[in-house]
Amino acid sequence: TITGGPERYDDRGIIPRSLSYLFKNFKTGKLGIVYSCYISYLEIYNQSGYDLLMEVDGKNEVVPKVTMLEDEMGNFHFKNLSMHAVSSEEDALNLLFLGDTNRAIASTEMNENSTRSHCIFTIMLEGRRSDSDT
Image 1 (cartoon, rainbow, N blue to C red):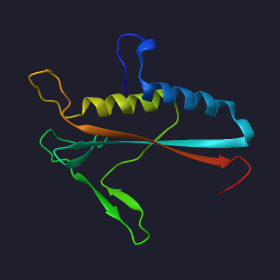
Image 2 (cartoon, rainbow, N blue to C red; image 1 turned 60 degrees about the vertical axis):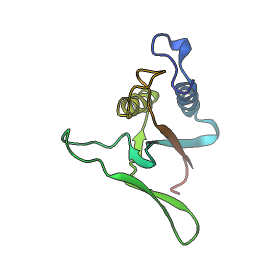
Image 3 (cartoon, helix red, strand yellow; image 1 turned 120 degrees about the vertical axis):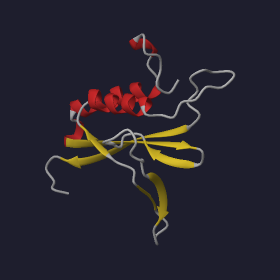
């Protein structure tokens, strides 16, 4: 599955396995490249986008919808979607679990805890030669 089962480490899903692989390889420092990693988590529910990692102060505060914008070059950007820098596998997994906790859940006839939404968990990587400023 995507996130896997919570009981056993061997049952983890594709996202936790990918994060583990990435951070394991970041540590090796091959080819003198320093990596930065950023995480975002977008939920699409009832044809609207929501940032699953946005911090909201009060329970009744309305979370702004994420909107997709296209610039003059044809590139797409997301307004109100946060990007979080992470420096470890643990930090990234904590964001994954936080986002999963914030998902919209409603019961159906087939599944009492159906998520009723679609999500996009994004891992953005930036590589930079350790002897370069750019």
